[in-house]
Image (cartoon, rainbow, N blue to C red; front, side):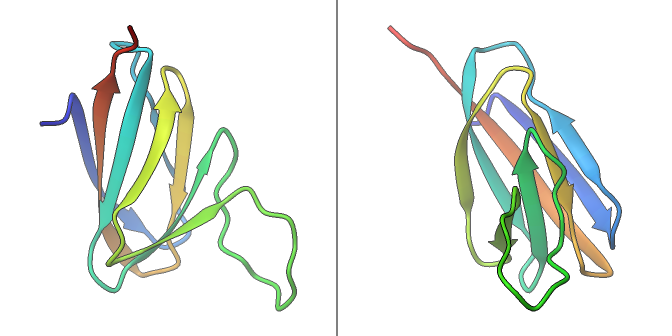
Length: 100
């Protein structure tokens, strides 16, 4: 089971952030969102929904509703989320990692 779990309903265009707790040095972060939802996420930056029709350098990754998104994160990292959907339910589960 996760060490920490966070849930929210994101509103369109509104940023929501989580600061990774310091009860462990590192975590596997697992993000799940509602089916048909879209969320952009950034670690240490500001998540942004793409607006242009051309490729450009980005600091955000897309999470689609049917994909379980997993990343390694560290204590005090700030994770920023934004959705283009009217609303989008999201769950962030953190699994503590211990090193030998």
